[in-house]
Length: 331
Image (tube, rainbow, N blue to C red; front, side):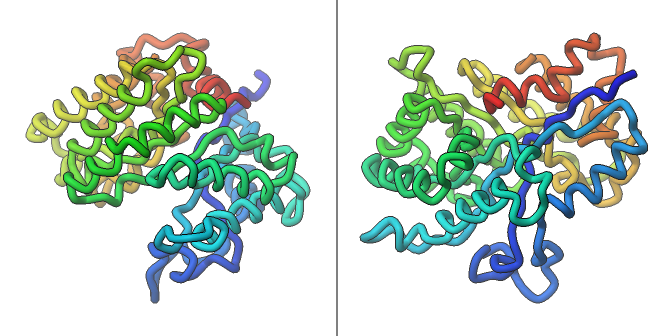
C-alpha cells in the first residue's frame, strides 16, 4: 500500500537566537527543556524514523504556529513594540528560503504568525502591512491565518474584556474579510471552562451579520486543553461535571460555521504516568468521540480511530489525518 499523506497542523520552531527568557517569557531558567534551538531538521530526525517504522503514514507537510514571542507594551510605533513577533516572521522567511535545510521550502506548507488582536483595528492593519514586508512574497503566500493566545488570561473579567471587546470582534471580522483564519488557544485545564464559553460567544459575535464567504475561519487548538482526571488510569466518571461542561462549550463553539478542531497537544494535559498508547487511546475516547460528533497524536490517534465504536471508514480517517488541515489552512 502506498503511504498515505499526513499533514502536521501544529508545530513550533525557533532558532538559537530566541532560546532565552528575553525572547520567550515562558523559557524560564535554569532547567527549561525547550530552551534550545528547534528547527525542521530536528523534526525530520524524529519523523523520518517514525515513518520508516509505519509505512502507512508519511508527513507531507507542516503548519507552523507562532510561539508566543515577547513583545513590549503597545505604545507608539508598531514596528518597535512588536519587534519580537516581526522578527519571528523574518525567521520564517529564512526557513522558506532554505537557510537551514533544503527540505524546508517544500515542507513548510503554511504559517500562522502572531497578530495584535487586542489592539484597535488600525493597529492590526499596520501590523499586517509590516508583516507582509518582513515576509516577502514567497513566505507571505504561506501565511494562512494568525493567532493571539487568550489562554494566559486567568482572570475571567479580563478575559471577557479582551475577547468580547469591540476591537477584538472587529479584528476577527477583518481577518475573515482578508481570507485569513484565526487559531484559538483556550485552556479548560489550567483556567476553566469559562474560557471556552466566553470564546464561543466571541466567535458567534464575529460571524454575526457577516456573509458566509467573509466569515473568519476558526481553528481551535488542542481540543481546548481538556480537564482530564487527576488520577490515572481510573475511570473519568468522577469528572463528569468538567467533562459535561467541556462538551457543552465545544458544542457551542462548533455551531459556528467554518470552525475546525485540532486533535493535538493532549500529552501535556494528561495526568502523570499516562505513557501507554493503548491506555491513552482508551482514556480519551469520550472526548474524541464528542469532537468527532461535533466536527465531522500519531499512534494514539491511529489506535483511537481504529475503534469500531466511531464507525469511521477510510475516507473519514483521511479527513482526520490530512484533509481537514488541507481544507482549514487552504494548502
